[in-house]
Length: 149
Image (cartoon, rainbow, N blue to C red; front, side, top):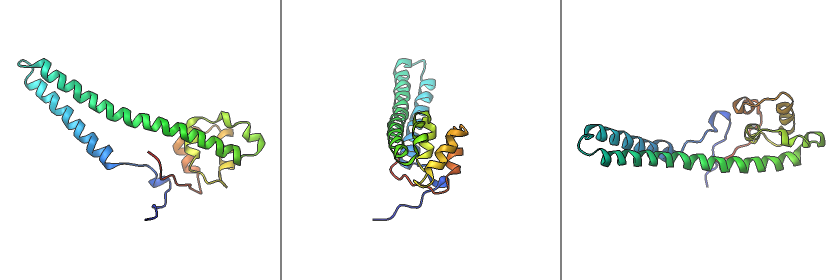
């Protein structure tokens, strides 16, 4: 089995071409075509083409919500995983502050290696750094996550 490519800040974003480009592109073209047909045939069959436009919108919404729901579940799992990691790796004074981490902070910190995590976590809490991008850029020892949605 091929070894996954080394992951870092520059290449960690995940795009699934079939989802992000093909499915989304087809549904956008479908919506545009249905709007065109509604505009061209409005006087002849507005209800018929209007329903097609509504179905095209619903399909796009389904695609969007499928992604959002999957990401929300992933965020909850990351929060749980990071809580366990932090409980194991942080010294006792910082362990008491685990509840103070925001979800954005936990999501960004998940990429930090075990050796680096305690110091980076303390810095993020003490300096109140909330921005995911900023936190990810501070990571020196990147811990890859190839199982992301």
